[in-house]
Length: 153
Length: 255
Image: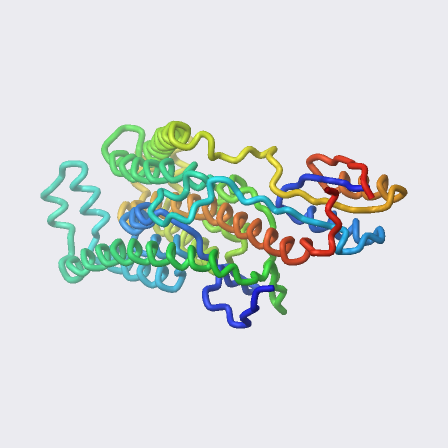
């Protein structure tokens, strides 16, 4: 029998494999298929971060820090003082930068973004029919996203 | 079987008991922006910690001696006579040099590091996912970048402690606390909170206060970005491990 399970990249995945091996399954009976992560690019001059989440903060941090400095400076003369003006600057700048970034990212790369629920790797386990239930339990217990049983010898 | 070369020529990462350093693709323009905000931050973004702290120290010294921040403050509020008066010319011109050097060098280094990152991905040398030393433990695991950012909002540098980088964390924490102290920020926050705005304005040290926004924003941004980068290296290392250990030719395929 075969079991196929999908996982995220995380420590639990390694623990799942270890638990399956402890059930008497040999290393040669486990086959892992780590998926390449979509949007990962080797192009140096691409704007690189659009696919990996860092760009979520680029625009916000840049505009936020700039507006915060301006807020602190003009707090010197404005009535509310530097701290409130600085914080307002940070908030407004961050929000504007963040929204701009998201709208650009959505327009340009909407299909490259990874969904949290997407499988990142697959495990295939070849085992005897009487082992299926316990292997299946070990996989589910360690955060498998989905498990399927295939007939076969 | 490929011939295994024992010498790693283009490593992707280095890890010790206290810090982790990785090659990752980064946008050179964003790196240059951080150097413009404060010389040294661009290099810290590239995990060139020594260079970054050195440049930051130099810039802080010159800025404090020459009262550059005060001059910026007066200029932006239209008080040009005061701006000229407050500047100390003993070190002022050096400021320009250090600023432009930091921007240029971090931009250049970012492009160079991107090339190293591509070459390291190509070589795909084995990576070390954890190190335990006699005084510390560093082990990669998925970390939530928003948690790192949130901790840095509360204490500058705390987000870096969360994501495995002790040395930048020490710099950001000590530096952040020192700047906040010198600027008399916390008493001013107290006065602002109870509505005594005139008192808040009077208690602040403006020369030091203008360091706060950039320092604070950088520590938040960098903690977030580092967590994302380390998470990606974790995935890369785990995929490598699985490919090397669980793709046996003896595996009996179902079809």
